[in-house]
Image (cartoon, rainbow, N blue to C red; front, top):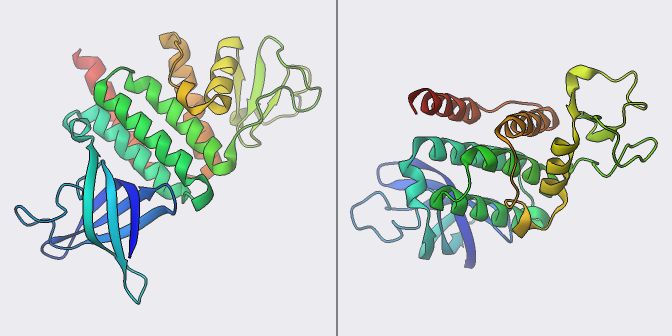
Length: 255
């Protein structure tokens, strides 16, 4: 029997009354758990078996290695995130991104903390979801070992130089003098504001990464950079991100 705290980041039906839960845990990364009978009315473990529920789970492991949910205690439900289409679609993107990266045991505690903090801000709406997207993308990449080298130019070590060049395939920073012969299709030009924002997200303590302000223009550029960095580093794009963008665009048109 294994007792562990975890966040349900994906759910899908299994059989007539069961669910498969994808659970992000601090100790063992991402686990697939079978929750039996939770689709029945008033079922045991129904509360913890909902998307974006966080709690303590008591798991049994079968001889074939499958985890089954035995009992649970709900700590917090981020239910209201599911009532806003843009915020839900963004959370689903974060789920897909986290599952794809295959968070290992060593990084999982910080990734879980990042996810919980992000869901909190999505729920209470103290931060724009347009800000939460680039923060989550870049910090997740950093926590799983893909933190970009943003300290200074990787050749001459210059800390700032007007506009800097960020090579997203290499994850390195170049000054204007040292960036020659780069494939600029995989690079982003960073002014001082963008460079500071990227450094702040990637290198600050976890509790500080959501506490900065940035103009709408720079936020749009920042979001594109962190999105491209994740896509290039992981070698793929994500359908949930396209769905989020479609709902976001719809909101902007109807505001």
